[in-house]
Length: 333
Image (cartoon, rainbow, N blue to C red):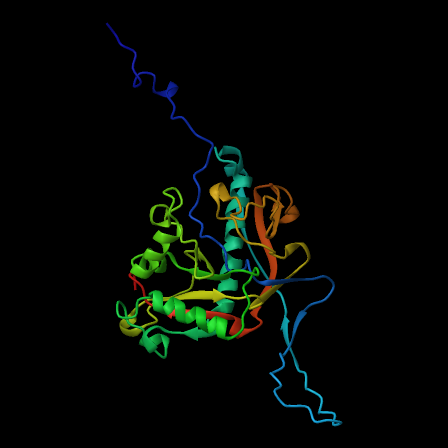
């Protein structure tokens, strides 16, 4: 007796296709979240002005004598936005034959690239341009050694105290911000002073960082973890990788853009590409779609279409004393 099998009816047996695409590996994009933000409309540059603080006056007034006037000074930081962008080109054939929604997929991919680009520019504007500290009384990045100079509780406290001594204010009125790499997170979570503090800070089982892995709030700092945190590959002694942890106070740095292509907030690393901030209305850059046939005589057979992103963006440190970069080694150096 003949048996009908999947082999004899191979064309009728199809692999089920799920249209839900898997999430891509995107870093948590956080470096620009606490910048002073400006916007340019009709001009090519923007100025951030800062008046210097007056020092204490402890001189006793002399009766009937008017003292000399104090002197005031102002410094200016000028930002000139530059344009950045990229695109993906696809053919009419892939548009017709692909199971995946090409337009929306390419738009998401390019949006993620735009976000990563802006976050990297913001990170690099801080790196090397703020107050820099080193572990174990090291004086330079090149002297940092693997294992010997791993970040620890004492380094964290010293970097934070440097920020406080500069009279930096918390970014939101209450908390400073610290941005670290996951490798630095792994090292700090093996430091007993850190783990003991976390353990006692959250007595509930469902909120204990020792169980959830959430870095959270520590020493008046909100700590954020990003795989896009600064890493100086082979930058230390014996080619050790050196990492930068940023301690940020209010008005440490600023950024500007132009019109509707200003990346006001860049944060699309949440579930399925949603913003981690929860704001569904964030549109970090301009997405430009050129459909098939839009190329005119350059595309006579309507074979090519493109999806692109473009942004106008500039970022700069406004007060180098209001941010500290702790360069250090960790378990992965």
